[in-house]
Image (cartoon, rainbow, N blue to C red):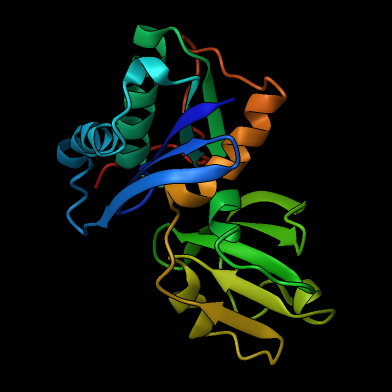
Amino acid sequence: MSLILCIETSTTNCSVSIGKDDQILGLKEVNSKSFSHSEQLHTFIKELFNQLKLSMLDLDAVSVSKGPGSYTGLRIGVSAAKGLAYALDLPLISVSTLECLAKQIQINEGCVVPMLDARRMEVYSEVFDFDYNSMRQIKAEVLDHNSFDSYLEQTKVNFIGTGVEKFEAICHHPNAIFHKEKLPSAREQFSIAKRKFDKKLFEDVAYFEPFYLKDFVTK
């Protein structure tokens, strides 16, 4: 038995889910360009518990998207998750934002490249095979028309995430498939969190920090 609260705030999508055993019990999320996570997150958590008639004391763990992504968004999500884990004396689970994004599509061949918009022509990306095994580590990279050619020459490549539109504008390879308007969600986070819970792969609540990939830069 495992009841897990999942929190996703790495992009403009503020997303919360609660899952038990092998199924999602409830999900609340909203995509707001104004990054209203600080106002929405705790309200969503409270509403979801009320909707499902559950108590936070029923929880077995808290999971959070660890990044990469928005610096502010990640700070809000991780701070909330750490606060709940500490207050309720629960294990903390961290989940890769890009793995969650990759799991929004199901394929039987080829690979998936989740990419999150950084600045200008830069994205945060990773490469997964059709079983969601990582084929290449996470990178912050500047896109050009030759990006991902080594994969595109071999197989179909599914690009997904907020960085897709800028790459579609410069990539015209016939093996490229673009999945637009997709954001990381707490829906996909649960299955990964459940797997890590079963293996007892927990974070140190006191010292865990988001995976920013790059240093924060003020404008």
